[in-house]
Image (cartoon, rainbow, N blue to C red; front, top):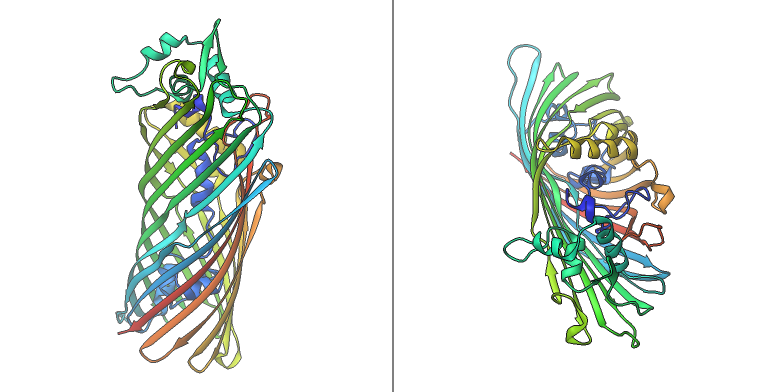
Amino acid sequence: MKKLILTGLTGLAFCLTANAQGTDEPFFHLRKYYTQGNYGTARSQAMGGAFTALGGDLSNTYINPAGLGFYNRSEFSGTFNFIGSKNTATYIDQSTTENRSPLDIGQLGVVFSREGTGSRLKKGNFGISYSTLASFSNSYSFRGSNNAHSISDSFAELANGSGLTPKEIADDYDKYGNAPDGFSMALMGGLLFYDQGRYLVNEEALPVSQSGKVTESGNLGQLNVSYGANFDDKTYIGAGLGIQTLRFDRSTSFDEKFPSNAQYLRSQYYDNELSINGTGLNLTVGVIQRLNDHLNLGATITTPTLLWLTDSFIQYAGVDPITSDAILYDRDARTALDEFKYRVVSPLKANVGLSAFLPQKIGVVSVEAEYVGFSRMNIKDKNSAAWSDGQNGSIQDEYKDVVNLKAGVELRKGIGRLRGGINLINDPLRYASDFNVKKNAVVGSAGVGIRTANFFADLSYSRYVSTGAYNPYILDDASHNSVLFRQVRSTVGITVGSFF
């Protein structure tokens, strides 16, 4: 947020450098949006998402619309994902574990198969579907005993750096009594006091017992409108329009309890709420070429998504005083709602894949490479060129382009299917390992399915491990403590569908 350039108090997962830690700038969130695991139908999830050179699956509406040209019949199907996550957070050498089990719509859609016209066009098939590309459901708690400092020390550094007097801060409040920024809120909420030209913490007693919780929800979804054509049962081309919707909500709480020898405060708190919503558009074009009866070669390009976003952010702080005269103004305060609009240009994506059909139609093996151009992302606020330049400078400093590798196998016996896959996801952050954040991830998957003349059902399981770092607050001398967290996410996908 623009005002958070000053406050710098709402540390975000996957912090990058010492200067960037503790900020809540939009460029930080881009990794969360566009580092995607397995998605689509249960069949696609089970095979690691390696569908660039395969067709005849509803996931083709998003992955490679050329694959729609393989359909000989119309199809309707839906996928539900049951997500179980185990989060372990470590703060000041103390670990806390939390579990969560949300339910998502993985994919829902229909493909209409139509006979082609002329001698070469065998099929012209149209598909429409909704796909969940990324789920942001996450929650973790942390606690520890701090012998060195409290969050008030961070607020005091920011307040002293502002050069404002308490009267100037009070005059800058809006008519509803809301603070313009975090350090102003800390002063009015009782975390700080002013003495002889400096802001000081209201309570110095140590050690302070610190605890917090971060809860995230929402998803990145895409409505796909796609067309795939079959020429001579050899060349398949397709194109699709993607309409993205983004919703990301995060609430953060941080509480401090002072020891029994405290003079002024029993406890204090700092909470914040962030909401990001937006819509965007992209275009995918793809081709699949049958090299012979056993090999397919496929390729796709997805343009950067133009995503228009609105951010809303609000902060709260307050204290529980020991005596009524222990605070300067009030025991609770909040900031005004900070809301602004901006545009994001997502990474360009390009995939190339090869699929090999096993003898006697007993199955297929598919592999592919996926290029994601993270360094070419862009953020723009038309009302603030300086802010936009700062965001894009951070993108260039912190992100790099990556190549992800995917592979999947499907074995067939009668109406039964057995599947497995792997998805190697490279971390786009340049310096993630400097902060104990695992740079790369491996998504392993497996699944089963059945196919009859008019009905099919698939079941998949995938496991994804991610790590990150979060700072409840930062200090100028970098002596603040980070929360290191590890999330193990298991997803069970269930797809049912029928042909018509």
